[in-house]
Length: 534
Image (cartoon, one colour):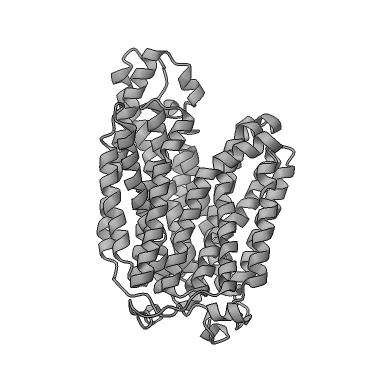
């Protein structure tokens, strides 16, 4: 497709224009907003028990998180498309204002029902922050500078993951749970002022665009079914229950209807023609598979550490830090190498290869394995995640048609989210099924009288109350079941490795071209920001 052909390659030794100070200010503002959105879930999770105790409605407590995740996921592709149609600055401004209004409303909530509704509002804003920050950086910077700077977003994710629980606990204890939401307000206002006053992007010209309302609704319906399926499956309902099967059928029907609509409308929310570009398609497949396998495994590792290795909840969180640090360092190194060489193909390949080895090693975990050995395995797992986390976004942006730059960025992010959701669902089902087989072996007298799904949802407090002999048997059952989960994720990574090898080793374009020329100004976006054009 002619629209997807890369521009003139940028030689490895070619001098790259430095990033101007106004663009750096914008970048710092975007980092702050991304940090705020990423840390929100971790902070709220820490304050969760206090919130439930104060507002009541414990039966609705899980919806505080589901509501945010649901709205966050649904709006991601919408923001990508709206940024392409109406300009990223006004759409980004709307998203951060919405997030701050939702945060303020959450802090003022007087019931669990109100808090859930306000979390939806907050998620609508948060989804825009996650997508538009990457798209704005892509529009402002040359591709090789873009790779260098986008790697820092993974560092932000790492810091947010580590600092979130600590900040949430300190803020809740010192000021009360409402301040886990109110703390977003001064931080968000500072970031908003940095972006609004310094960000200058070329104006969008042309006729008033049409909005793909049917496509948005159908995609939202599909994502809603998927989020509810992954949240309720194996927990609230059995995986073979009518409710879960109905959600699966609803998701499938919505996707089919969405594809039919997207093939006919003038401005589809995700243009199907983009999948004619192999780089775009492969980037999305790699993002989905790597998130499915790697983050699915990461989510189950604390469970292994607590039940099998016998460490406390706090210590298991500390043991996860090596994975996060490995992810951050790998992402930063990948960004620097791409900046210097202008090539990106082998990072997704290395990511899938490292991930395959890491998951094979994790499938050999035993209760008596040294924590330093486990930490080394986790570092390798984090490196695998970091090597592809932002690289696939850079690859997809590199061949993106200018008019679809935001959609391309948001689609890769959506694929990553969907992969993580599927990973939780698929591996959660495998865990519950294996527990059903392993529990009778290690608890032959059926002391607990619970199914695999029930045991998978026992809290740490419940586990502490078990007799020592029962806990040992349960730990053996979990060890056999969780290592099977890790082993079953290996084929997913092998497929991802094979797919990543098909990615073309294209050089990064000399100019992104995603905001000048047809969009007004004729000046590279970074210069426009510096000189106050647009």
